Length: 406
Length: 103
Image (cartoon, rainbow over all chains, first blue to last red; front, side, top):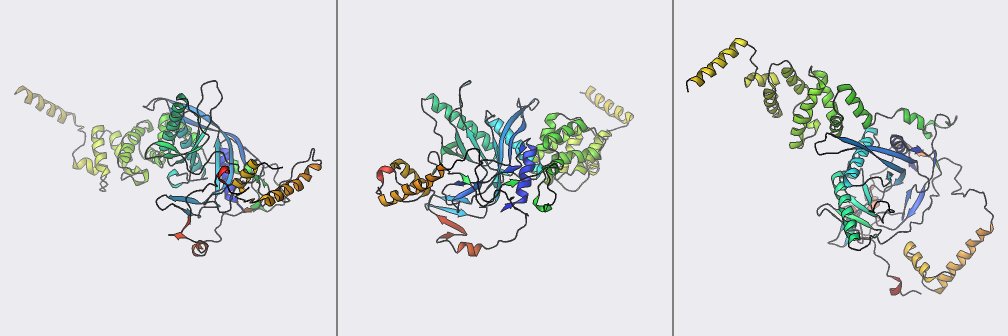
C-alpha cells in the first residue's frame, strides 16, 4: 500500500525541480533475483512515473579563489517512486552474504538526470544542490554517508560531434567528494581503454574509495532482462489540482498539487538571492553561508545584534569563525562562540574601543569557551585602544627619546 | 517452435528447469494457447493493466502500526548471524549452455 507522505515528498521535489507532475502515474514490477529482494521483484514506476521533464540549476566556481561563479543546468528526466530492497553485507572470508531486510519495502524516490554534465566537479555540484533542495523541502535529510541519498553515476565518453559512447554504471559512491573522484576516474579509464584500442562494456562497476578507482562488480553479468509488467495490486495513482479537485472524496485520500505548490518553502537559490539583496554580500558568500548547516542563521543573528555593517560582519563569519570551525571539525551548532558573543565583540570593534588586531586576539581567547565576555578579556589583556591624545603623544615622545639615546 | 537459445535464456531469467522434451512440449502448447489472443481485434483499444484500473490507489497515513517482530521473522531463517539472514555469496550463475545436462 502506498504511503501518502511518499507521494507528497515526490510531488514537492518534482515541483522544486520544475517538473511536470503526471496526474495519473502507474506502477510496474521489475523482476530480478538477489538475496536482498525477497519477493523476486521490485515495485517501481517504469512506464509512467510521477514527475517528468524538469531541471536543476547549480553553480560552479571557475577559479580556485571562488571569486567567479557560473550557473549550469542539468535536465531531470523523471522522478519515480519505488521500493527499497534490503541491505547486503558481503562476507568474502566466509563466502556468504548477510542480509538485513529492515529497509525492504520502504519508499524511495529516484531522480533520473540527463547526461548534461561533463566532469566530476559538475556532478558533485549538481548533487550538492539537489541535497540542499531535498533538505530544505524536508523530502529527505539526504545524508549520503547514511544511505539517505544514494548516487549511481552513469559515465560515457565520446568525441565531439559523435554519438554518445557505451556507458557504465558506477555504484558504491558514499560521499560527494567520492562522486567527483569516481566520475573523473571512470572518464579517464574509458578514454585510456579506447585509446589503447579496447572497447567499453555496458557493465556495472563499483567505486573503491580506498584505491580511488572503479572495479567491475560481481554478479552483474551483461544486460539484464527485467521482464517489466504492470503491478496488478496497485491501481493508478491519481493526483489533483485546484481545477480537478473532486467534490465528495475523503480529504485524506486527495493530494492537491496546487496546494502543495503554494506551500513550497524558499529553495536554496531563492534564499541566496535574498541574502545578497538584503545584506549586500557577494553571491559567493551566500553560497558558503548555505553550504554550512546553520551558518546563514548564525550570520543573520550576529547582524541583528551588532551595529557593524553586514558586509564587514561576513568577513568575520567566513574568515575567522568558519576557518576555526573547520580546523576543529565542529559544526556551527557546536561553536564555543555564540552569535551573541561575536556580536558583542564586533560592537567593541565598531565603536573603536579596540583595534581589529586586538579583536582577533579576543576571538582566539573566546574560542576557549571559558565563559568570559569580550569586554572582560579586553580588560584582562589590556587591549583597549587609547583614546586620549595627550597620553599617545607622551608615549610617542618617549619612544623617540629612547631612540635618540642609542 | 522454441529455439534452444530462447529456452536457455528463459531458464536463466526465471530459474525454471524445463528438464526434458515433455517440459518443452508443454511450454510450446502454452504459447500456442496464449497466441489465440492475437485473433481479437484490438485496434484503437487501450490496453488494460489491471481490473482495478478505474479505482484510485489508496494512500496510507504515515503512521507506524506494526513492527518489533524481529524474533518471529528470524525464525524463518535456516542460518542467521547476529540478526542477519545468511545467504550464499551473491548470485551463483547457472552453468552455461554448453555445460548443461538438460536437453
